[in-house]
Amino acid sequence: MSWTSTMSSGYSSLEEDSEEYFFTARTSLFKKPSVKPTNLKDVEKEKELRTHLTYEEIRHKVEQYNTESRDHFKMTLNTNGMYTGFIKVQLDLRRPITVKGGRAGGVKGQEAFYLPRGSINTLHISSTNTARQVIEALLRKFTVADNPAKFALFKRFSREDQVYTCKLSEEEHPLFLRLVAGPSTDVLSFVLKEQQTGEVLWDAFSIPELQNFLRFLDKEEQDQICSITNRYNAYREKLEEAMRATGGLG
Image 1: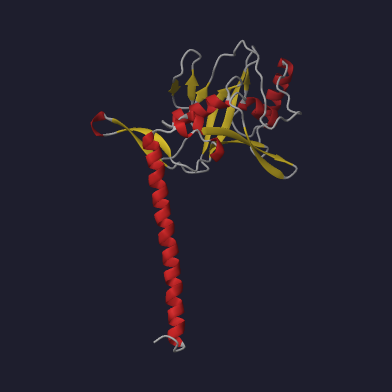
Image 2 (image 1 turned 90 degrees about the vertical axis):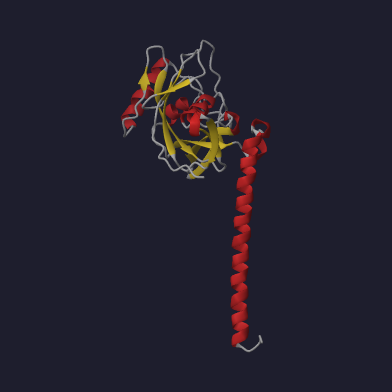
């Protein structure tokens, strides 16, 4: 089955003392600043990326960001040094996801869907939110039942006319990267993908989910068999026609 409904941007809110996300008309993801010092590490270990800015540096960058921004997705700086803003995340999921749903009689059920690749979601987050929290917010927004550990947040960036994709660590702060890069999505964008094949935590999948995967694989296999069979049958017919035309086939 395919996900046919449109994916509009929304806001979710994350309270510090609760793991629940509460959704309103938009998606907002806030958490109070932790007293523990942050330790941002880019997975590609870029030495030139600074992981801490002073209040004045943040204020200057926020002002510059808002000046360069061509839409209403601005950043806001609080007096405590925490800032809030928006990030856009592109969904690039190749495997079906399991969505929570209701059945007749009020019985809750789950169904597998393919989300349309390339859909973009806008999240309102704070500078303290991590990549892990962004993933969880996106999954909860679409009532996805799959384990968040199956997914990873990537950054896509350009350098010397080359486009690179790099996986973010779970504790990395996407809004900090957005602030440093500026508002242009051509310079930096975020993508939600499945974990790489060698990194998939298969133990995180339930038996129904694995059975769904097998059904999809069986269907794809049968479609490929039919396609190849039809192609070779068409070749055979053309060859037989050519042989009859030359009298080589009785």
